[in-house]
Length: 190
Length: 175
Image (cartoon, rainbow over all chains, first blue to last red; front, side):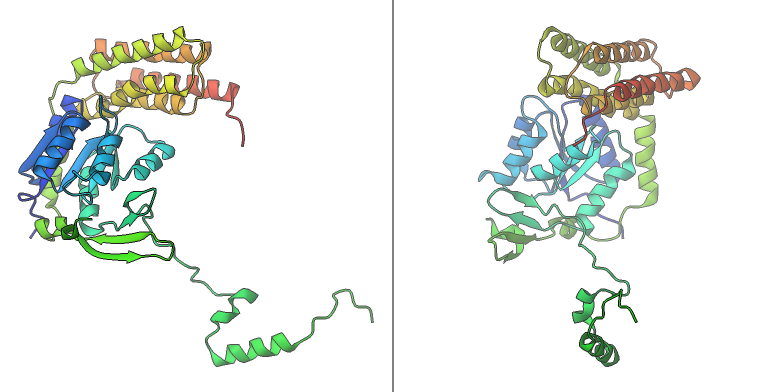
């Protein structure tokens, strides 16, 4: 059975009316029935507190309260009914520095406009299938900003420093012999 | 911290808490993904939507012109001032392709990239912005939806070339 979105509520925030209308239509096709809308961060936070939606999709640059500030309020104010809510931040910016900035604000996912329905769906799917852990420290509260786990080197280990990983007895013996040998000068004359 | 959202909290040696929230979305949506037919319908909705964008785009163009004029009138043209131009350009880039104006998105994307790499605006940079305004005005005035054909490609090429020439003439300082 496919995802059932009819019981999942979503708050969409964008100060450009055509964009707001289009996102709502696309979400409707996906099967969402509880869709709340707002045209700036101020109104969005009021609606967020009132409805406690399961997902927030917000534009970045809005007047007078932008997406940054909305995320900050959702994540960090006591009034917020759910500081862990998944948030998709939409923007026309594509520069890496901007994306990193959005990530540092506490957005769960970043969606570059213009986008395809597949792009929006991918972000929603990601939040369902691979939800992020949260980090709570003095300077930041929000989704863990590290997406991938660092994978160690999986090839043959050849360095002196790798010897502590030697597991077979035969290799351990070779290593012991090598470590007992005294190095000789390279330019030794007969 | 509201416990009803939290599944597990671990505290690292440095005091940083790593919290695993409950997957509330999973509880509501279940498993199984989305039917590809629904996804196709959603793509069609974006591709063929008839939501009017002409008027909002014209308003955004006015904001671009005002921001450029304000920047020209100042003696110090710093990053903050450039940001005021970036905002409506970003909106034009964002909306164009979603409302049948992909050419608007391509041209605005080039200019946004140019502005993102600029720390100050000189007369030549204003020249590039003047060309941008002229092109967007023509696209909206002529209601050039779609990619604009050969003329559209030529405009994209010219805009790209102008920004490239500027960046080659005034390369970014190397760190």
